[in-house]
Length: 229
Ligand code: IPE
Ligand code: IPE
Ligand code: MG
Image (tube, rainbow, N blue to C red; front, top):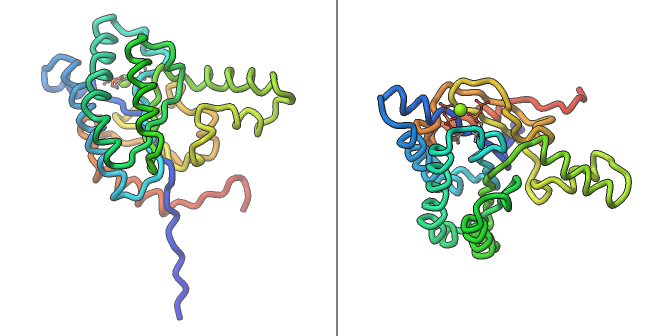
């Protein structure tokens, strides 16, 4: 009898969805079209998570630093967010997608906060998680978590982890960034400690469920050591 070793399965994948602007620029289209096509890519990916047997997908949608962009681009992004929640919430509910938000999302416009509150309530019974990082910064998250930990006692790694926005999610297995940039841009700094990393050249609007499936296959071949041997 031959023993078979099951390949490691990723439970939690996070993606830095980068390259919408360059996708549009290459086609001589306005940046907003790149962002619109980026939303399409998100929609297709969320639909595929069930077939890929993924427990949690975390997407970096808007960073704490993205406020530095021109006002009209920020407005476009916020408008797309409103549209996305409105159009896709029924599908999330129907397909058991539980929405989770990380970041300082209560600092967004009041109508978006209300929509998100409602979406969180309506999807609370879902079995697969879509975590969206909104107004998110990893350093800010760690600072908030450390303050909360200090208020309760000693500041230990475990106490900080328990206060992070991701405390209820499975440990991060794989972090992907699209568009060829090789940096974290303040995303999941704490959670990335022992996550596997994958940087791909594909621009975000071109990223398909097949790309994610390939990433999961790549992940399955990796040997994780966590400092041991
Ligand atoms: C990612 O695409 C979307 C957000 C950061 C909201 P970019 O807008 O950063 O696209 P590039 O990096 O300029 O190509
Ligand atoms: C990171 O991308 C933020 C999101 C994908 C939401 P950026 O395009 O903002 O990152 P930098 O500025 O290139 O580091
Ligand atoms: Mg970018």
